[in-house]
Image (cartoon, rainbow, N blue to C red):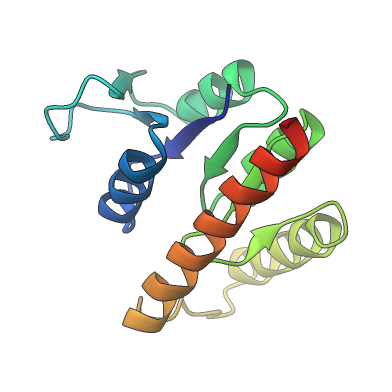
Length: 151
């Protein structure tokens, strides 16, 4: 059954995930390093995995299955989840796919090297209403695509 996993520590679209999941009657698991508020809804679970590098990522990658959706901005986690057959959506809506994950990993590596050399590469752009709208559209499309495949 389709399940939504959210890399929740810095996720700006949790509210949108809750709304869409409720509309479709889907279960959601928030995975975080520490406790956080969540709606009082039995279909929304919080998995507190403790703090540490990649602890939440490891938990998600170990529990996600083909046909699930993962919401994250973490490129290595996206690659791991794609390898398990999941659909992966970034916070601003663009999906990570088999066709684009290699480029995303390479760009991430290059930017990390530049930062290590002292180059200022800047952070992500501010999150906008358009990003939120794009995310909602992509999540809805992804759920419907998965449901069509499993019918």
